[in-house]
Structures are given as structure tokens and as C-alpha cells.
Length: 139
Image (tube, one colour):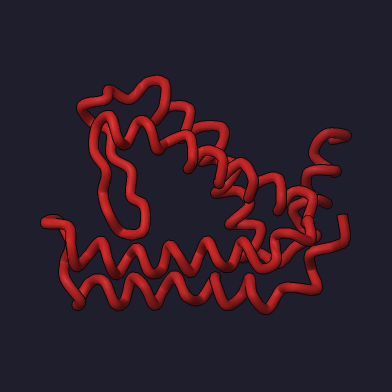
């Protein structure tokens, strides 16, 4: 109980949607990215940056940058740092843009019919983060 209460208080100090992003960043930082970098075979590796898919060695080389981004976001959400505004929103806007581009340029993409809705969906958290400036405390 003594361990659970501080975690519960921490999770409740931000809006639910921001807590969901925080938990996602923790998952990516401590579970998925270490798997992706250290365990996933190079032959299967893919990383997407700005909607462009990088494969194998290029993907493996770029993965630590994603790891850094997720770790920085997790830390920023944990401490609710001032620098998170506007950078968290800028990153999510880039993800929104990437969703559209990926669907247009990747052979597995669904074109504009799939890309536009995906891009629009990711604008919602980007706008929410942009409007949450007052939630990010001074360092």
C-alpha cells in the first residue's frame, strides 16, 4: 500500500489523456525500445521518421534516437517540466504528419483515405498538449 499510493497520486496529477501518453512513453522507453534495439534481428527492423520507413541497418542506427525521444517525453511527463511545452505537441504534430506521409509513400499504406483520418486523429492529442501549457510547471 505504501508503494501504490505515491504512484496513484502521481498518475492522478495530470489529465487522463496525458497520463495515457506518459504510460505509453514509459512502455516505449523501458520495454519496447530495448527489445527493438537489442533483441530484434536487424533483418526485421524498421523505423519510421517523418513518414519515411527505414529498414535493417538504417533502422537499427536510428532506433536510439526514438529511444531518446520516448525517454525525454517520459521524464518530461513524470516531472511535468516546462520544456514539454511546446515540444511534446511539436513531436505529436510530426507524428500526425508522418501518418499521412507514410500512407501516401509506403507500399503498405492506404493512401489519402487511410492517411488523412490517421493524421487527423493524432492532431487531437497535439492540440490538447498545446493547450496544456499551464500544466507544465517551472523546473
